[in-house]
Length: 321
Image (cartoon, rainbow, N blue to C red; front, side, top):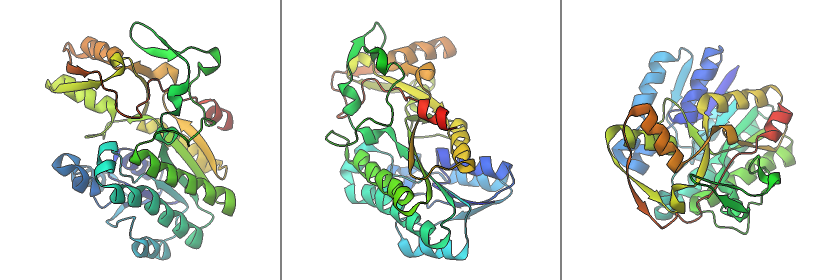
């Protein structure tokens, strides 16, 4: 099996390289280390690329920019693929507001380039697109909530399992990052539904794993606690809730789709209620695990569009696979 992974030096991308290399696939990884441009030295993924070169036996790195249509088409012309795992993205809300063209071109145009290259050169390939729960904008905040001592939770029994794929994605506040990812999400669905391609869209929440350095809620708050860094909690009394999923579990879901693709389908993917924590609960859990108290400052100013309580409803994913 020939596999293309975009964003191959990032969290989910590098996990995809390891996952398919271990299963005997030949893996091409597209990554031009744009995170170093976006985030400076802290975003440099050279260390992860070097690790992959040393540990993945059937891995070939390709340093192209997915915004460059000619380079993307050339790669697909030279090498056909059985599976495309598209993880490359500009991931920051704040940076999107500062560099909106770069954000949109990576998240939307880059996705279009890859989909069209797949359609022209390997239309039978399975295409797994890593989207985000930010496509729902702040619409999940309209759910009726109750305030508990350490977290917010859904008030209605029918919301107990969390946000499902029927939650609307328009007429709400996304951030420019959320808007660009929504554009990529929709065009990926369309290539599945309009052209009948084997495209699946995975709307991830808080993703974590062993190879995450800069971004990711859980990784950053753990690092802040262990290293004694100052942490800022923005609004909602620290009771905002997220569910966590490990990158290995994300890859297990993607591979289940590869084995039984359903063109144009969308899946919420996260830890679900069983793997959820509020920030306050995370602080206490870290104290139990490390013996250290997180040093934090509270600002009664929620981030614009931030989810108050977000749990991934996994019933569709479990039903289909």
